[in-house]
Image (tube, rainbow, N blue to C red):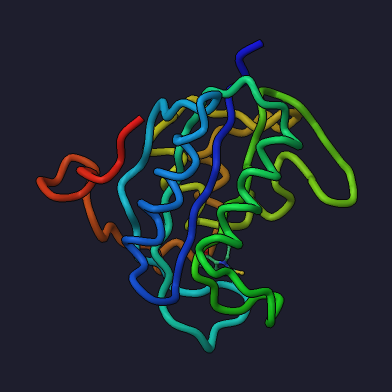
Length: 175
Ligand code: GSY
């Protein structure tokens, strides 16, 4: 079975652009993960723990034969390989890979909650998601992304950093 998943990426340590592109390359190096679409890259003000550097954020859409837990393992492995440390809960990070949605499934376990629990409050996720799928609906939530975004106070902190169709943006991303 082919599953459709959306993954949010974020980085605010080191070469943030390289961290995003390396993470995507490692994901799609897996024979059962295929990149379907990707957003522009946005520079965003930190949410939560605000005394840290600006993030680069983006969202990708993938097809995969992996199940949600196998995909989570893959994401965690890539985070570790790229040097992610888990010192401060909401703190700076080399790379963060969050599975936002997996088909229209609701999953609630100790290690994995899908849809991602804080997604509805995060403009740095909703804006890139809207860019690649304006029809996206979260399971059990009637409102379209545009309405969810309108209700958010912090979207001023999200700015395009590299437009998807810019010349030099995504030459590193292949599937
Ligand atoms: O949830 C992902 C990590 N994170 C981010 C992020 O990716 N971007 C912004 N702007 N703020 C964040 N706070 C946390 S925690």
